[in-house]
Length: 346
Image 1 (cartoon, rainbow, N blue to C red):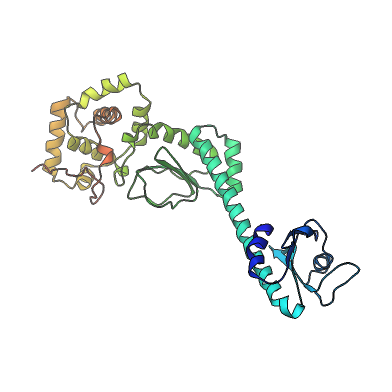
Image 2: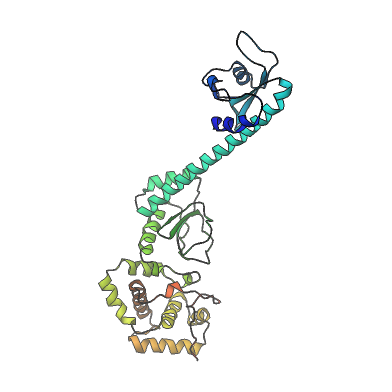
């Protein structure tokens, strides 16, 4: 840093320039032969914590006229800037160079701190993503970073906007985000937004679940569909053997995406009226859809147990790539439906 300052400034001024460290040793100079030598006036500036002005040359010590100004960083003297020449000519220049060096030192330290913090964040998230993190190590990392509970861990797909999260790591087009508290719902991305956690061990569980779901991107819901999406069912489908998923998928092999959304809305609603509001359809339309689903599948979505079986089948079809219902988005009053969804007449 000191050498770079001298190399930059010295050619632009008409006076010899020296920079000394906190011991008074010359570490950068427009006269390379002086490097490594102690500077008497710098030692005085350090010990007395003030600017030293030398008006006359000292033939004994070899000291030349000039001004030596202490360098401060975080309120502590870190070195000295010396400019050789008649004090009345170089005093203001020495002060200006000192301020410039202090600014550069501050910027350098901020850059170092920022780089260290970015590395710590990357290490922490890499541990979560890879599954190598431990409860104790994660707790220590969170404390070092000053991230206070509650925390949330989220997974974002198709997020191509500018980076807006400090604690984020992008791997294979998936962005992992850890924040203090919930993150703002990213309207442009498919995402799984983690719940608030107060224990690092819960974040480890969330990370394992996100790794599982991230391996099957089709199961990650688009913005607005998260109200209709069920994480437990998505995890079950993601973890199930493919042969078992094919067996489950046969139950709903003949129903449309529209009927699949009807099932999702029924499961996410406490009453049929709420499901109607989510789907923005007429009551008769909902009845027709439920009757059609029962006719095609042999399972009645009005019966809770049979509705769950139908949903498991839908999630299995998504896992197998037979349906892509979680990748569509179109804003409704209480949720979303696929783009281009055509309304049935009542």
